[in-house]
Amino acid sequence: MNWAVILPLLLFLIAIFIIGLWSSKSLKNTNSFLQDYFLGGRQLGGFILAMTMTATYGSASSFIGGPGAAYTQGLGWVLLSMAQLATGYFVLMILGKKFAIMTRKYKAITLVDYLKERYQSKWVVILAAISIIVFLFSAMAAQWVGGAILIESLTGLSYTSSLFIFALSVMVYVIIGGFRAVALTDTVQGIVMFIGTFILLIATIIAGGGISNIISDLATENPNLITPYGFDGGLTPLYVSSFWILVGVGVVGLPQITIRAMSYKNARAMHRAIIVGTIVVGFIMLGMHLIGVFARPILPGIEKGDTVMPLLAMEVLPAWVAGLVLAAPMAAIMSTVDSLLLLVSSAVVKDVYVNYIKPDASNQLVKKISLTVTTVIGILVFLMALSPPDLIIWLNLFAFGGLEAAFIWPVVLGLYWKTGNKYGALSSMMVGVGSYIFFHIRLPNAFGMHTITLPIILSFIAFIIGSLLTKRFKRSY
Image (cartoon, rainbow, N blue to C red; front, top):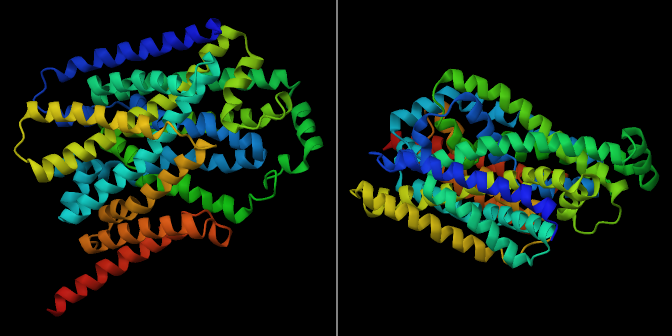
């Protein structure tokens, strides 16, 4: 084992654990366990809000799968990835004050709480909870695979042993600390991600002999690597522009992102988060995907794209610096996993158990159930991640697409269109998820567009028609 690499990473994991343990103190004497455990008491400041959004959105696909895809496709994938630049800005501008006001009015603790009060429908709640549980399981599995691959690359341990170490390190601080622990650790992780990206980008450029030399090497290997169209020419203008729906517009519908728009302290915090978040996300996404492309001349012939990041760090950096830099992808993965784990737990505990099984559950019982459910979910995801896919970015993007197809219009039109009702929301969710799964299996990238495009359009039409037809039907009777 290369202890010069492992020790800095180990120290980082210990620091994260200590922060999580410290955060758990606020839960010991709380009178509102659900709000404090799943929402942090709605007290996030601007910088913490920006960093927790960045850290949650920057995941294994950004730091492991993304650079791997960029390594394969070239600069075209960098262009595609930069659609994510406006993500935080877009989410907070669309949801912003209105969403925070409405969720406080409804006393909503989860996204499904908001949908429950807005549409007054048991079936909207159940369908929403099922969508969160199913798709976020896929997303979590992708992150756990990424964490295990990173530890495996560094230590030489087996994949299963690496997965166990990662799972244990994340589950402990999430279970004991809740959302407050997640937000505070996300802030540390976001800073580490920013610094790690900067160091590795500079080191990669130096190792490649400068940007002009790297570009020349790429062009010599395959001219398509330095065009917007990718290695095989598959990144067409239509596909790249439609991809923005997945990683830009549709992000408004991701529960792990919308929950952050419920948790900030005041308008000033939101405005500061918009500025800081946009800068940090832009730099990290540009830096990490450029690193993936620039790694190709330095480490030619890598067959498994998910190993590009750790192999490159150990190639171009001193061992102890590589350990510090590799804390960045570990931070990205952990920060996404902790948020998703908490979201699935809240869907089971708050949206199903408290809402429909035992509404009069005591604070102590809810606490016990929450900790148990979070633990069980973690174990189930561990089992799911034992058989990893070849490139984790696709598993992560599949989950993103399913969640966006389910939630974007019930959330956005529920805020801005009074005529929207439960029938429109149900129609939108069923058509969105159903068509997304159909297109993903039978007609991926139909008409040259990303698979998410048509389901988003169809779910929008279903929401409008479902709401208008039922309104007209009620009037006639």
